[in-house]
Amino acid sequence: QHTIRGMAKMKLRCGLALCVMLAMAIGRIRENQAEKMRSLVA
Image: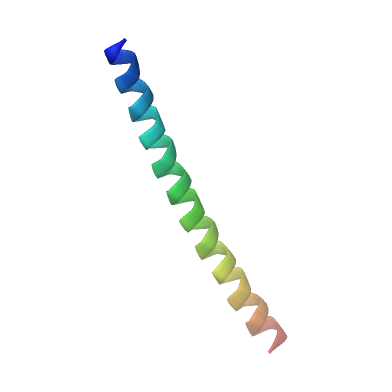
């Protein structure tokens, strides 16, 4: 049971880390797209 809890915690931490990395990547992509749109419009 203890090992199962440990695995669950590890999975949760890994999942959170992945979500954070994805969110940051998406944010960068959106910023790049916004800059491209601005350069195209201007």
